[in-house]
Image (cartoon, rainbow, N blue to C red; front, top):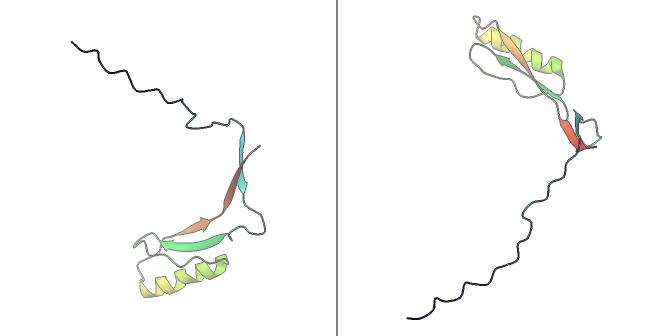
Length: 89
């Protein structure tokens, strides 16, 4: 009867992740290089949507063209995209 082979050498364990605990803060991104706030209008009847605009009035003008082409579409929603920043305090 032969002895079983020795077990393979154990490799040292190294950390796989580092956790850092702290308090996070979230606020609108107002840095100079932040993406602009954009506005779009979306038809609630057919889901068609205007292109994003930095000027809300330009996005709202789309609704008049859309309503003119689709007289039964009376309900719209405004879609605002605002960049935000998160950082650990």
